Length: 187
Image 1 (spheres, one colour):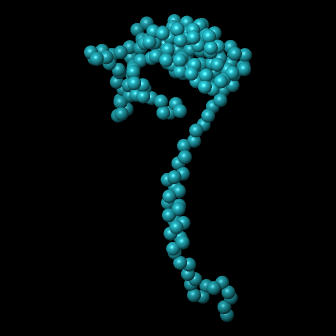
Image 2 (image 1 turned 135 degrees about the vertical axis):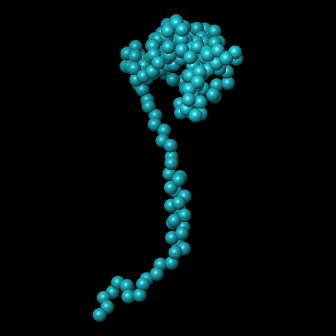
Image 3 (image 1 turned 90 degrees about the vertical axis):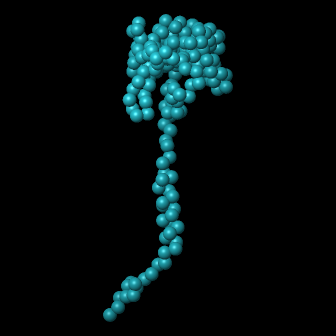
């Protein structure tokens, strides 16, 4: 599913942690899951301003949120790279042409995790999910299990059509036996 996710599918730019937590609550209501853990991967910039409120509501539903901070945690932040179709990189700009800087908001992420009994983890600029899962297992007493799914993409269709056409063509080709080659012994 993650292969189909890209920034362009989000109608409103920016992070809305409030809505992400609300959606996870809905998913738990549908699934009736025993383990109620959410892993929130974000830079922590919440443009809704209601992330902590959503975390407190999630805690009432016994949902633990493990926040994983991704990005530059320097005070100045970092520009948001945009990859162009030709492969070059440019940086996101506001309506006045200024480069937009994103900053890791560790304080908000720590508050969200604390409010739900989860934990804040700093991933840096490169995310290693195995380390994140290990930290969660440590806190949860190894009662959690990681499940990885492999989704294969069928590509047999490209060979199937020519193979079927060859089989069909074979039915119309007459079998002939060359004279003198009947398989018997002639003297």
